[in-house]
Length: 605
Figure 1: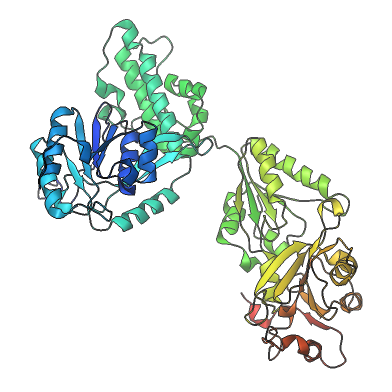
Figure 2: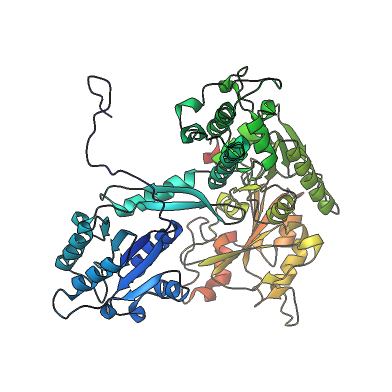
């Protein structure tokens, strides 16, 4: 704003006076019956307006939503052709004039049939209708004709209660004053995405507390009138930065003084409490705020407190966080923030490497899951119970998982467990080892000419049960997580030609199909053992002890980028060359390849 010599801002035209209307017992008249008319009708209904839709062609020509609302008697539908009027060029104007003479309380008018449709209205007709409304001082919005508009619609969003889906009192609207309607919608979405999901509920709870303020005054009961400006926390008497005067039990306060004091509390909590705290207020807490009780724990300033040093009681929360495949540089910013800035307690899976745990500040407690064969279920329950116990104490708990929490990370059962106990966890994705590990090994899970798709599965089911593996598709890569310890069984299930086998869904894999076992992916001691399904068991047993965690990549993408590369697997003659393709990849007379460590390029990243 540009100030004048007096210091007051200089008004510059081009803006709109953005108002919000309550339309109870008023009528909004909408001309047209297309989808835009339906949208205008819905907006007016939400503002408690009665709605009359006037259109040509009758209900049969109306859009589905207009027909539905008319059938449900939510709106009044009038067929323009059925209105009394003489024939002639100005029949529409005469019919509308007759309607306006007999219908009271029409407050707003929307002309929507100036856009595409079988009864599209031209500029001349729209101008005549506009003038007819203007004579009666009825504001008009005419679609796509700014010069025939007394008001415009903002791009609006009404917030809901995230737990029930019920609409809340909070609405926001964005206008570009006719300079970019599509952009206004985008900006609205941007604004909404940056506000807390429970912001509408916070507004609703503050409204309930304001109502309690007026009820508490007992003005009606005692016959006293409290001026309306005293019950509005926007007034000067309730400037949030002014501490609320304390009072003793023995002090007598008038109804007006009590109302002023309570509205100051409302103003202060509205200004200083976190949105989540406002949204979660109970009636008891509201009463305590209005009475000036329990303020030390609530974070509201009294005359002895500074509003700039409020100590807000923080509810506990649980974050389910993915740590990625292991390399610290692959942590997402969100995961890094959770570990270094938010966590009070970290409950970590045992396979999360030290390099990731090392970034956690020393003052944060870290507990490692005691998962080992035969104890996985018990260890899982122990970690979930520990998370609930800590969150109930108001702590932020980071449940740290390897890779991505929802890719065989049990995130789903933890979400449901925590939700049932009153906590809605935030799931923070991580870089999944299902994608990252093959990349570190030089294997693309998809590659033009080699692999058109990929599938991820586990090699072991719940409580150690066998799982059904997918059948062979030449142009598909199979990624198997958590199956290296059962390599013999997995390989047998893939190559078994017994038609009665239930371990595989689809054709058997050729024994010469390439397979890579990737261990400790992204870590300095990463190892990749590559072979064929026929020889991979011997290859792994011949190269020393295993290095968990490990995973398998099976399919022709395993060899696609090795050396000079081979991206002709899916060519018409490709399958005939498979055995020669495998020999070129492994080397004449060799049954496997072993690669130790990361590429040198990862040093320092």
